[in-house]
Image (cartoon, rainbow, N blue to C red; front, top):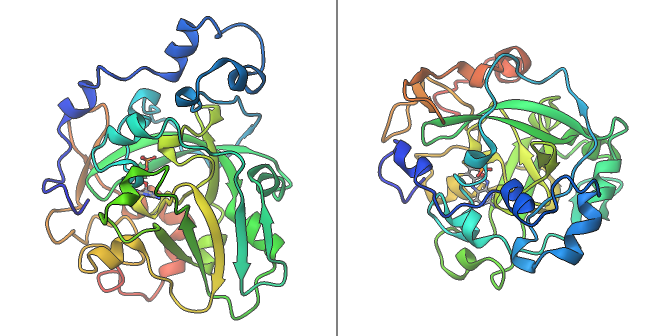
Length: 321
Ligand code: MTE
């Protein structure tokens, strides 16, 4: 983002990751795959800590809100081509460095201007949704100019908000990533203003497309993708999708966001995908779908205008970028 000068993603960067050992190929190599045992029962005893990212199968329903007719991005790309600066600034740093990150026990504090503040483990957060886990296949667009199609598994953020009963004064929701420099080497350096923070306006947070994801590709999230729980907002640039969340806070005023603090002219609070508003250093009119060579036209609100455009009626989206 700030550090890489070119927004272009050299395709070679994705394909040259020979050091990557996929979770599935590890399981196969270890003779675990196909053993018919629940991964959650097998893995803690059998795997060394650095392989703790080997994941648990999740039960979920498929959601009607999934995008249809687009090829899902291969899992090996989604799990090795990451932005997670707590584990390094190169795209393959998170998959290399996040393996030992402890994601259990974990607690999320839901606090601020609400009648029912609560501190919950991840399972209890998931239980706040009466529908259980849903798979949402979403189109994702990074501000750097690349996109992916990812089958997330999660719950609507609205379920969490309703359970907390925000007060009328609560106009925004602020999110915070864990602060743990011992486990997150990137936090030992002042690359960003730690901890990573993000925010949404209350109507954006309540929108049916906004989810808290705990999994992808049928399994719990790999650490490099934001385990154990992260935000997914498909009509906004990827950096709004804050990872490894420990705090959700209801606030009255627009909360600070990490990338806006770092470079306010480049990254606004809203960060809606918008082909008509260029990043100061590059155009946002087109994008490269990971796995393709030809560039595609970027769609307004990343193709989700029917669901979200009305929230921005009357707003100058060049000013509120
Ligand atoms: N969350 C935290 N805590 N730290 C980060 O560096 N990077 C953001 C976002 N969430 C980031 C983060 C950026 S810039 C992007 S594009 C997405 O995560 C990338 O998500 P992915 O690696 O799962 O594709």
